[in-house]
Image (cartoon, helix red, strand yellow):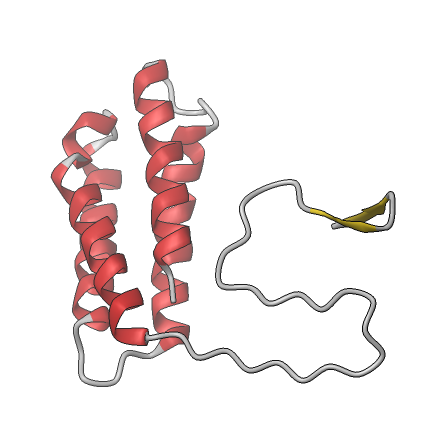
Length: 128
């Protein structure tokens, strides 16, 4: 965020945020429904699993990504999901997809890289 012309400028999406600008004293309260956020996360990870074979990953990377995505789904559907574990699993998924999204995987086509980038963005946005 940069101050250009007296107001905030955001270079990218802003989600679930509150911004106070030019206030001396401010009190903000925000209540997000975790249930909906977790439902969105599960739907996004389900979409990732449905398209996993389109990424052209090695068998080892595919198996690791599938295991992490399944674990993330299990955690998100538990009675008391652990946000730390959700984020750790996301980071593991991000590591695999990130390499593909940057085009660093030999033999991966541009379509796979774009799909990986889209999946990364979708899962990150869906994290509560």
